[in-house]
Amino acid sequence: MRRLFLVIIIFSFVTVVNAQELRARINVLSNRVGGNVDKKTFQTLQTALNNFINNRKWTSDNFSPEEKIDCSFLLNLESTNDANVYKASLTIQSARPVFNSSYLSPIINFQDNEIIFKYSEFQQLEFNENRVAGTDPLVANLTAVIAYYIDLILGLDYDSFSPRAGNIYFQKAQNIVNNAPDGRNITGWKAFDGTRNRYWLTENLLNSRYNLMHDAYYSFYRMGMDKLYEDESGARNQILNVLSLLNNFNTDNPNTMILQFFFQGKTQELIKVFSKASPPEKLKALEYLQRLDISNISKYKEGLK
Image (cartoon, rainbow, N blue to C red; front, side):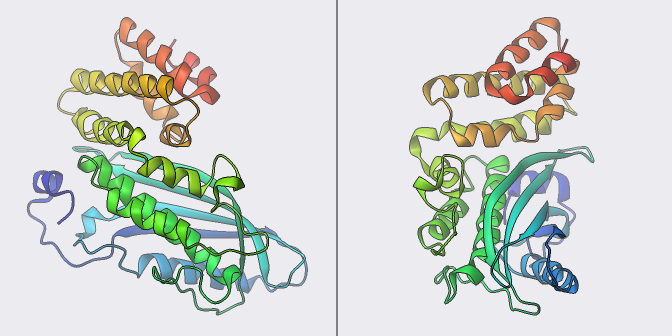
């Protein structure tokens, strides 16, 4: 059983059932698709994706309904010059509950802009870990991308409950990268495709040099956010310690994708956590955050002044 320690605390009265792991919401936007494509095609795709994600068993663990991971996918399509072939951006969000509250703390808030795939209405969505690329790379690319991010969602959720518990899912994601569909215009799976893509995200998550990031995920959520209700001051201090560790990590490993990935979606949460801090704590947090989350400096300055 996964996340045993926290589950015993929160859900000791729940009978565990063999349930699917995700509570996912999938939306497909087709406003940018031109031509004479029947818009029902995209509603069919949305239904198929919901079924693909929510009806598949992604782990060997047992999940009770209360343990399901809240996540969402927004697939925004645009036309290409090829029939039934679409470019897309995919926004992935996931969150996990904070102990003794109804609050869901964001773990992933990321947009992948390097997606291209082929889809015809009522086409079966299939994924096989042992044959990721399938017979048609463009057809297989969509489910490969979705499965990749589901493994990341699972891995980081596990990391947030138990030290370095997500490694098996990061390895599954790496397997998808290694065997990903390969073809004309398919990008995001190779080191030379850019510096912020699926390849580099998984590389960072499995690189032993960056193991501190896994400790940061665990400490931030389990030792920080989960303790806010019972000991707000102590929990805030733990989160400040995480920022200190991340500051040292950034000094030793500048410009890593995983550090940027960690902070996406956390700005308002961090402002709220430190808004009630003592002036010295608030100043220290602001000092770290201005170095670690540069794109949101103005928000931190305003929220923590």
